[in-house]
Amino acid sequence: MHDILIIADNLSYKINENRLFSGISFSLKKGECLHIKGSNGSGKSTLLRIILGITSPTKGEIKTYVKKNITYLGHKNALKSYLSVEDNITLMGLSNHKDLKEYLEKLSLKELLDIKVANLSYGQQKKLALLRIFLGNTNLIVLDEPFVGLDIENQNILSNFLNKQLQKERGIIFTSHINCDVDSKTLKID
Amino acid sequence: MKYLRLEVLKLRKKTRSWLGPILVFWLIMLAYPLTIEVSPKNLEIGFFSVLWIAILLSMMFATEDIFTEDYNDGYLEQSLISETSFSYLVGLRVLIHWLLIGIPISLLGFVFSLGTTENLSLSLLILPFAMMSSYIFLNLFVLGNSLSLNKGSVLGAIITLPMALPVLIVLGKSITAIQLEINYSGFIFLLLGSLSIIIVTIPIVVSFIIKAHLE
Image (cartoon, rainbow over all chains, first blue to last red; front, side, top):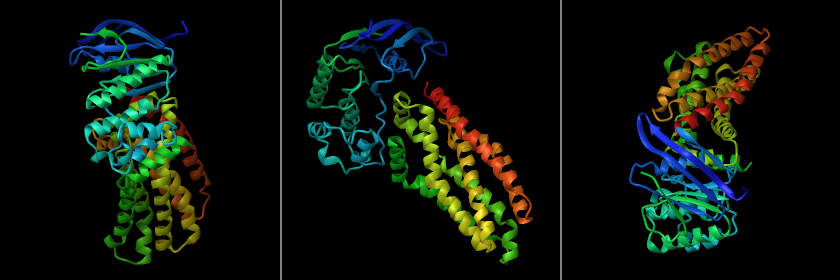
């Protein structure tokens, strides 16, 4: 039981009278990855928000055993466009992280430290936002379409990182339309 | 301390958000003598009313986008799932806004008061009233802003403006008491009492309102 990170039982979500999904059940153990698949508007992001405790399910129950030890990257990247890359890293609380330099080089962000986020491309912003995940060091990682906006090289960096986190007994839940090389089980919602 | 530092960084780098309300206050106080016949006695008559209203309006501007941007860019969601209590983060943000906007405005109020009344002891007494009222107004408008998070800040200000009226009345009465040299400490305690309740309750209420918006 102590290996369990999340247990979801018969989750349903409705917006007014429109049913988004129903009867979703799954569990996630340490070292496991759950890939949530579904068509546009099927409620993948909503399910992630239910897992995070931001949204409540209309029906069903979800138990998380990670006590807010979660890193999350949603559709919105939580970056401040008026701040520089360096200031955003400070804002994420990562400026003194021992692996920061390594990831800045890996993601080609090192030369962009003084540039305002508003002047970065979408892909560069995505990479900056992903630093939160790369340097997060939490038991559970939740990602909403993390591969969107990344080139092949950076998609591979992210896939490799996620696979390494699984070896470290961390749990991962993500949604993606892009085929990726992450060792995961699939949850399909329609 | 870490969150305090980060909130200061966010507000400090967004010049418009902290300098705007201070400029609004400064402009109102500068414009006031232009609207009346300039004589020391005339100036003093309406000065304190203008001062409190200027503080009220500046605090309204100060909270204009206190949560809107964070709501739109996903920063609030990150705050919500962080290990730190969300209501504590809300309270901290209000405190930072007060330190960077409310305190300078209160000090400017003291300077304008000294320039107008040429009475140092009266102007020194204005300072704690200005500091307390700015913190109260700030909290009230933060409440309004959270209520109208996705509907525009003006609506929120309209909702909470009536709640600021009793504070304006207390401020007016306290100035009268000071000028008539009667005991005004009751007004200070009244404001302090209100402030102590507001400081605790508003961040909790606002955190629940924001959670409801994010849901």
